[in-house]
Structures are given as structure tokens and as C-alpha cells.
Amino acid sequence: MFDFSAGWISLKDRTLIQVTGPDALPFLQGQLTFDLLTLGPDNFGWAAHCSPKGKVLFTALVVKAGETFLLDAPAGMSELMLSRLRPFILRSKVRIEEARAHFSVMGLMGQDLEGVAESAGLSPLPAVGRQDEQAELRRLRLSPEQLLIIATPQRLAELPIPPALSAQPWELGNIREGIAEVTPLTTDRYIPQWLNWDRIGGISFRKGCYTGQEIVARTHYLGKVKRRARHIALDSAVPVGTSILHRGEVTGEIFSCIENERGEYEGLAILAGEEPSDLVTAEDAPQTLRILPLPYAFSDG
Image (cartoon, rainbow, N blue to C red; front, top):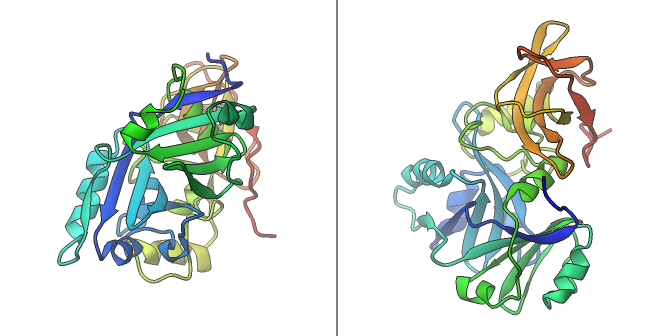
């Protein structure tokens, strides 16, 4: 359990990859579901990298910092991301490497986000969905209660930051925003639409080809998304991958599960059906799943 009023979050264990070089933009454009041509100095985007079969191998927050592209992802994803991207370089003038030697990342979150930012000399903040650069600090407003800060280690060390919380509140914030970040436990299992990547602007259906595009586009234009990531509540922790039952039949599985500030548990579950109900976990002592709201709809209607 933790205090979730407002405060600094340590994100030192998250993965941060940088892509540089004259061909960085066209290279990433051919690998990610997001249209990088829409990136500028005042915005950012969510992206996925898929296998040829359309399954998501990793997800990332993508930001353009000058001529460098930064990919922020959950902890433990560095080796997988590098091993998936580097073979596609071929003759491209691109360099892909871990970015921690050049950049550090810190989170600021909570209901009193503006107040905490002001006490650190960081206000006014950018609008939700936008980024800016203030005093050599790149600031990304991910949600009303989440601010991501990227800077050199030296510059970040200059901020008057008290002892920071672990990344747990940050992960919970992403769950509540419906951001289904792929981890080593969930890689190569789901197509982007099952993770609601189309609902958060993470898939472009107008850009050129990228790895896995055929499956992703076919699902969009010819099929119906039969599974979706849903925000769930539970009484106790459940392992990722645990099956979910509807009247005795498997209808989905646990994607993530984390303790919240009240000592209860929240997460995302990949579930079939438009309005799932009467759901329980496939455990020796089954738990009832409670569906919680997400900040976006599942249809354009």
C-alpha cells in the first residue's frame, strides 16, 4: 500500500532505448504501428512493434528529442527490444542503443500534480497529451495525474526531489488510463487491437507498411475485434496469464495485476465479449472480477 496523493516516482528501472542517425525516422516508421511523421516538438505517441503474425512484441512511449527518438517501455524489455530492432537495420544509417548513459527518467503523479510541480519550479505544465522543454527538462503530460520527465542525469539531479516512490503507482496509473504495456510475461501473445492500442492512437491505418501490418489492418477493415483489454478489480493478487471463466468456459486471461493505494488489486484483463459479466478467475478459490471504467470507448459510434 502507498500514499497516492502526489509525489515523485522513481522510474530508473524502466527501459529506455534511443534511436539515432540519418535514417532513424524511416527505419522506425517501418517497424512501429504509430505514424512517426505526426511527431513534433510538442507531442508524443504510443506505439507497438509486432511480429509478422501481428502479435505485439513490445510497446513503447515514443518521443522525438531533437533528432533522437526515445522509446520508453516497462522494465526488463531492453534486450528484447534491441534484439528485435537491430536485425532490421541492414544498410540503414541507424544506431540503436540503451539511452540510460545519456538520459534519466523521473515520474511525477497525483491529484495535486500542479502543486508539486510548482514547488519544484516546474509549472506551468503542458496540457494533457502534449510535451514541452523547460530549462533542459523534457516534460510529457501523459494524463491529468501523470507527468514524465526526461533529462540528462546531471540536470535531473539538480531538481529538489525528495525520496521517490517505487514505480508501482506509475504502473497503476497506466492501468487506469487503459495503457496495456507489454512486459516479458505478455510479449508475443496479443494483436494490438486486443490491447486497445487503436483506442489510444497507437495504430495508424494510413501510413505505409510496417512489420505485422497485414494482420493488424485485416482485423481493422475486415474483421471485428473479439477481445479487448478491460480494467478490472480483484480482492487479492492473481498471476499474469491466469484464465478467466464465464459460466465455466474460458473467456480471457489476466494481463496485469497490481496492488492499489487501498490495499486492493487492479489490473487489465484480455476478455471476449462486448459486455463481459459473471466472470471469475480459474483458481482453487475463484475470485469474482469487477469491471471498472476506462477513459475511452471501444467503438467510434
